Length: 140
Image 1 (tube, helix red, strand yellow):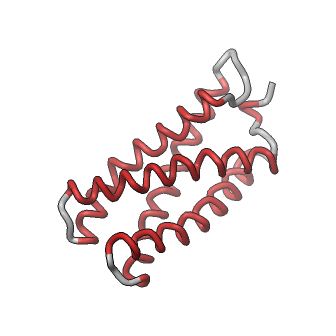
Image 2: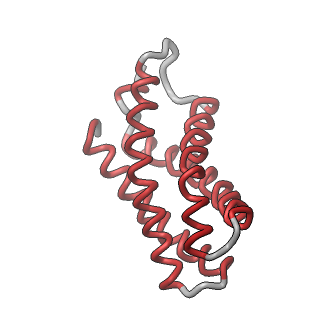
């Protein structure tokens, strides 16, 4: 599976699982209700979807220009770190506003999410590529 179909399937699967996990996490760690937390999870997801499409398009353009093909551990770690770093810049102010906490508290919450999502993104990408194969940009 390649192109836009691959990206839609990828983002849809990734975000459905992420919304469920994030709702539970926000509710547990913030003391907010599941309904309040789910709205933040959905908003975070919408932002993440837009960032995901943009980031992965740019990453694959860069990847296609590399002389070494494939996705080794180093490239997968770089991919996950770049994605999460960009998302943090947008999400911390949103968390602070929605949960009515300081930017510092929102950053601490986001660090917890980053740890979760770094592991989740790495494992999800590994599983996704195993099931659907590598994108054309990473094939030898």
